[in-house]
Amino acid sequence: DVKVTQSSRYLVKRTGEKVFLECVQDMDHENMFWYRQDPGLGLRLIYFSYDVKMKEKGDIPEGYSVSREKKERFSLILESASTNQTSMYLCASSLLRTSGSPPQYFGPGTRLLVL
Amino acid sequence: AQTVTQSQPEMSVQEAETVTLSCTYDTSESNYYLFWYKQPPSRQMILVIRQEAYKQQNATENRFSVNFQKAAKSFSLKISDSQLGDTAMYFCAFIFAFGNEKLTFGTGTRLTIIP
Image 1: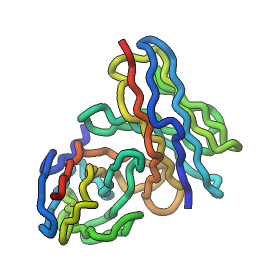
Image 2: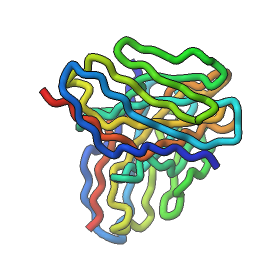
Image 3: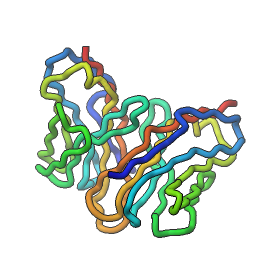
């Protein structure tokens, strides 16, 4: 079974703090993704990566950065957390598409509260 | 850019009944994939079913089936003989057949199965 794990289920941070969210997958997937999930807005893509040290902006990258130093690990960084970044953050991974569209496998999510 | 619309924020149905969740999308492309993902309460998101746009036959996975109407850009999910374990958020998602790996999600439908 594919396993995608996220470092924390719940996190409380103060405005202005630097926040790291970690994601690890154990299936040698090339692609990794960070989404945020908000009620009424569904999932919105923040960043994705298709290889080590490669990254692409998603729909809402402002206020976020990412790091992928190893294939299995993809980190989301909030340089200076703000209250409007309070949300559920979901990590996902998938194989690189050669044909078809492989499914994305999701982590359990990190619920971040910024005070 | 493609959009995915789920017009039913919440639905509820009695156990053992059949329920249909609706999804419409907008794209000018002809080759793409559509998905339904399920997110149970406090559990990880999983893929329920997938449809290739070039296939006329509707996808089926046990009690889950889709009604794919390409001309109408409609992709509904039918759950037959609903079970308590079907209680979840359901997200419709779209991806182009070629190009980047970016999934576009709808806003979700919260489905409650009533015992």
